[in-house]
Amino acid sequence: MGSPQHSPLAHVFRGTFVHSSLSAPMEVLHRHLLGVDDSGTIVFFEQTDQQEQLARKWKFKTSDIRELNNHEFFMPGMVDTHIHAPQYSFTGTRVDLPLLQWLTTYTFPTEAKYKDSDFAEEVYTRVVRRTLKNGTTTACYFATIYTDTSLLLAEIIDKFGQRGFVGKVCMDMNDNVPQYKEITADSIQETERVQPIITPRFGPSCTEDLLGALGDLAQACDLHVQSHISENEEELKLVEDMFPAYQNYTELYDKNKLLTSKTVMAHACYLSEEELKLFSLRGAAISHCPNSNFSLRSGVLNVQKVLKHNVKLGLGTDVAGGYSASMLDAIRKTMMASNSLQISKVNETGLTLEEAFKLATLGGSQALGLDDVIGNFEVGKEFDALLINMKASDSPFDLFSADNFEVIQT
Image (cartoon, rainbow, N blue to C red):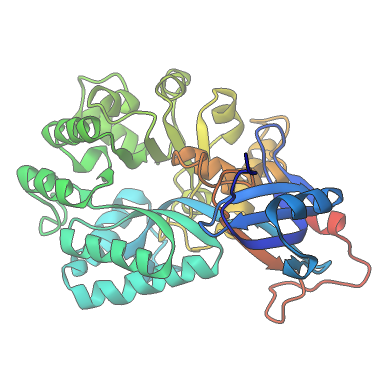
């Protein structure tokens, strides 16, 4: 019998790789070789002392290897688990109001403009290009209630090669901006057109009929779900008044079949121990959006408490409540949120930078149910990666002659 045939190699890289694993929040792997086949799948990832054996097995020559410089390294593409594409048009402005007033004053009137496909195409093109430039290779997007331009966002994402979920927003309640809401039946019918992520905006914008129908659809088609939960205290009180039959906000989603192993909920600043236990039981995930939480003065998520309950957790920019579309900013704000909880004596210790890095990469892939495809450099996963050049001419920081990799990573 002949030796087994392998797919042809498209790339072989040698150098430093930084990623997370189940056992370590950050691994810095110097002198490693990584091979990618022509389908984009990682087929080997070994130390360089295995080069001779790998070359024989995979039939590559030394001249085929792309050698990274000392100031270069690969890391996984970052995963934004919560971003509002239409709000990108006012990113960095209009953060002077708390959540509910912010929605009615700025957000809903802006999102109502996305019936116009020309306007939508301009903004959606820019947000996808910007997030890719910022290193976001996967994003979980909220669009608007308009189906056609939500589909347009999906087309633009595909055109630029970003991996993404697109949610046509569902909301059949909006007394403050009545022109920006749907009839319940229309919302359900149009959601069936878009797929693949069911997107009730949040509890206060949906009737029980809509939530129940969306849960049935998610269950019948085995779809992902995204929404918001417990972002600020005023919202929490509103949900309590609107849905008195439910014990808490989490139960509202759970009883309507919207809290599943394919669910990611943004914010979650005020979840009780009981609710976190239910999240863990259902396998649902949380998107931590610290920039937005600070900007709109909503609250601070206790990440360590969430992780102690074994709840899946990723990071989100939450544009435009968050004023930056950069996941690097999300990492920084995650550290600031953690530090603030340590300063106020809520937690004895804070998160490490390595832990925040994991949340932005592998954690995000786990939150979106993509950890068998992306998130780190395990063999069999797609090579979804960023090549970082710390001496690039347009680098946002300066590297000095005395710096080494271990200094930079701290």
